[in-house]
Image 1 (tube, rainbow, N blue to C red):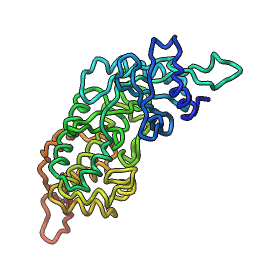
Image 2: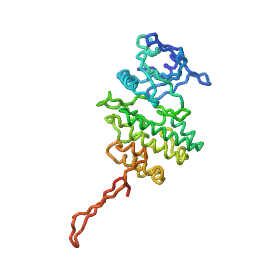
Image 3: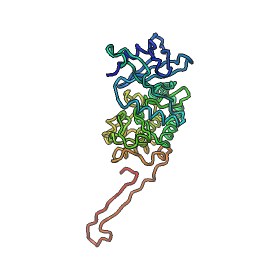
Image 4: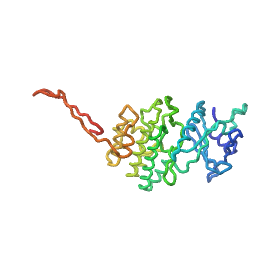
Length: 335
């Protein structure tokens, strides 16, 4: 077993950092209610702290669920990402014995736990920023956010990595509307080639057919297309945010992905000139056996394949009075 978030909170408040952790010591950040600032998820808790010696804002991530492979997993991620210099990523390192937690009274040696030391990403989540901008009808800023997300998408598509859980609260937006990715639990790097993903991401941002064996540099394709389409939709109609946002999504839901032909949202977006083409390719992806989107960069740049309809008949040379079977094949177009 691993400590709970409250047990970690006690240790952070009391600065219980062992001298064997490489000299890391932090002061907890306090909110207006004099409470330690932290957030928790299903398997981890993140604290905002400041380096004791420099005052530098830092994030500490501790885990509440044990995983024997976690340390090696994060070590490989850290070693790979430190060679990629990008404004879209935060620097981090994993420390094997980062903090001491009074967890096992009988065996104090078992009270040292690993954690991540990360640069603090200033800003708010993508969902929070979009809620603010849509409610204020600030379309020019939504447009800038859309353009910056496209830059983030092109960064991911140009590298041999993928985030694995690209969604609204794993993207931090600063005051200049620049974007930073956080939460690298499900990230893919070339070192992991041939292995399986430990998670499948959030359902309202993932292709319904994604499996654990889908673990490569292309697993963000569907998330990128749906998030970008959402931003285009909000830019042209900010009221869509409050209509469809349910805290677990931005615009699309799993139900939309499972039943696109019955989806009110898909019908709405398909009738809007700004989102019609992008929505078509989301539906095409959902109907495909593959979760990958080969021409994704072109779609983000507004370069859509030319629609065509092929007509054939059998027999090729019919006789007078003979029945003829006519077949239609559509390419990149709906009937």
